[in-house]
Length: 303
View 1 (tube, rainbow, N blue to C red):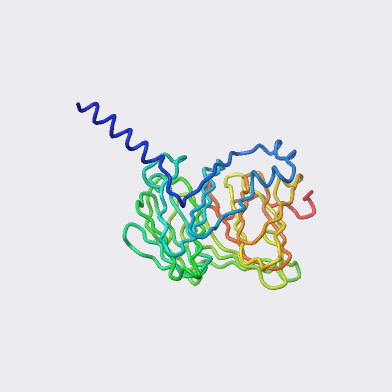
View 2: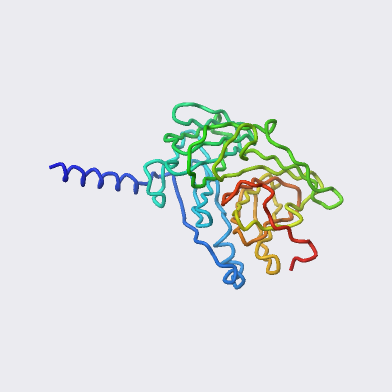
């Protein structure tokens, strides 16, 4: 009798984990060898690395990348709250049973409720959520001007407290120059040690380019101990981003629109020029938390 009960319990759990609500969507992206990526045409390059739909009204969208098992997501609640539930590839009861998460709001004012405690997130404000949180609900204050919660998640080995971070609390780095067309401000938001945040491996921040500047992340670099993702936003209507990726001597372009994201493998550079200025969110995960751990490539060595 006891054995039968246990089997039924496990069966019920398996069905529960595989269940998917009507508003959550996901896809899995596999890792690619740089020697293979050299031969990708435009369509294949975009299929592997571009995330075209991050936000959609009333939906939660995920891309589960095999690069450091990083999750890239977007949630846009309207009149109805959205609950973050585990997706089938994770095989867990709750989304953060083995993970940590960072959220940055790039839309209207919204609320993230974590295990009963509500955190108000305004435009460009961030929230770190540690491993073990169970109930996460996202709501918009005004359905006509919904919040747009951009979400990154990485595996975590221990639990750290939930922490909200505003731009005023961020570590600010001024970089580039107008003469170099890359005058920008780097806001480190979810970085271990910044504004009391502790993380296992997740790092997130927001870079803003000033008027007249279009280049980001120059000089270009790679970081073999971390992968990275970019979400471009505040790209004016009818303007575009030309994102460059690939090994330093085998670069490839991809054109992105507003609120689209791109996956950057450890072996790839990640820089871009826009047809106007813009902002972007960067998220990283990997073996270390050293923000400066990178291999810089001289600009005149790029090919």
